[in-house]
Image (cartoon, rainbow, N blue to C red; front, side, top):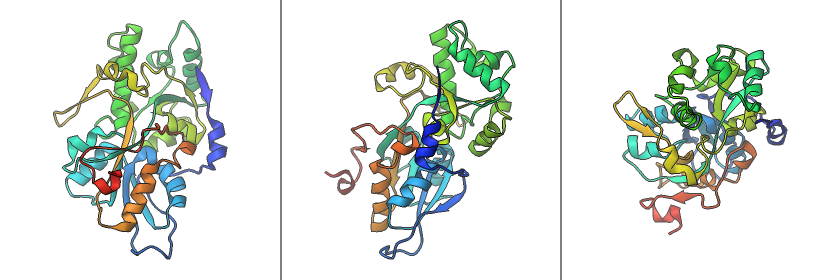
Length: 305
């Protein structure tokens, strides 16, 4: 099924944002530090942090957005030292970082955004037909698909999971290799730019990205969109081999954040607002009622214990 989420665009008052850029939130005379609180975050959080978090805190905030795996590696090797780290896959906290605790604060789902091009319309039309699937025009070279790098970004390896789960669902062995090619891989900023200019007909995105930007999108079933906790075991059947020898497996999309400057009251206030989730709904994220959910080794004062 195809759906339009353009109403979100008007509701959120969204404007274009560039992933990887630095944006400053509003300052307050009450802040006890003159330098901004540094937030290194998943690219898919950029707009929500710039347009939602910035209005909710009384402190300057500098947001740098990157692919989550790349961001975690920058922290792990000491290249970046943010006050707050917010990632699109909570597994990265254990896999790449020494400070394992985090707070889960949002969820998401995969979707296939479709551009207003002949290829984009072909993908959308195929998704509405009983005798076809959205990826058929890609297989037929009638539509150009865009995606992010699975070695740098959870959205990239979740795209791989999506195709593996679709292969099992539709009895299409080898679907992943048939659909994917290296020339489809873009940094997130280039992916969205190519999509918006029509250079890319369809793109695998998070539902929040489609909603927040008003993209038309194929609404994927819960069996493959990585949104349903009751299907976690089925999602785990999909996997991707990372270049460092590690393996990531399919799981429910879950965003997490950790505070790396726990003794800084201003940074703590920004972190607590970030994980509270009140600003996320307007940007298309899901916030389960149990969130924020802290891991057991989180500081008691932050976790409310």
